[in-house]
Amino acid sequence: MSRPRLAVKICCIESPGEAALAASYGATALGLVSAMPSGPGVIDEARIRRIAAGVPRGVATFLLTSRADPEEIAAQQQDAGADTLQLVDRLAPDALCGLRRRLPGVSLVQVVHVRGEHSVEEAVAVAPLVDAVLLDSGDPDLPVRQLGGTGRVHDWSHSRAIVERADCPVYLAGGLRPTNVAAALRAVRPSGVDVCSGVRTDGRLDESLLRRFMRAARGAESGAATGNGDG
Image (cartoon, rainbow, N blue to C red; front, side):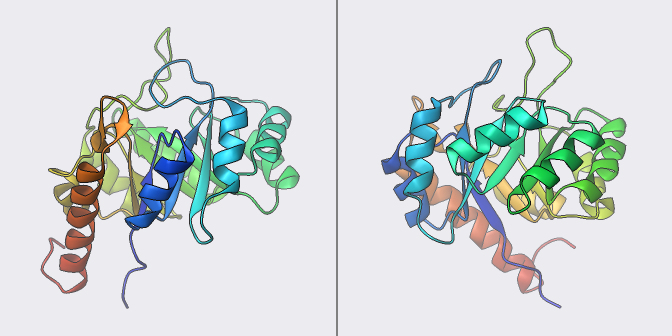
């Protein structure tokens, strides 16, 4: 049985022009970053709403939120109009269930910051409560929380273990770029990949890097589909 097509999310989208460029190269999802304690790509709520409204049909819009209160998150999503919530901090199971009740048509993606073996258990535990998990390289326990956008690669062996055990799709993020995304896909075999700084120059979406990233990701995907990738 063939695997579903690899999802490719281009994050930290800052303008309608960047959204259109990413979509033109085959991005399946775009990330829109709301207020964060640290990290790149933050834009105001009005711009998030404007970009989300203009995204082509068939391209998902991920609202990245660091909020933890279900009512606040639901209100933020309804204002933004994004079809997916990317929850960059830990949410308790009852908070996730509350979001399900409030937003039945919105996909929930829980970020798990991969920092060791305990992250595998964290991801496996939350998987049944969400539509996908996204594996990143932050540290929510620092005084200034790192909730993504670090540009660091984490230990892919833990990510592979999560892919093998989690009962939901898994996105891989954290330090991906055109030169390592193929190796990441072979090592982890995720359902999707997520990139921000790896396709940017001086903070702006770089068409050349975007083209190279997409070519490398789709090439690795094709190799795996034909049996030429690592199993």
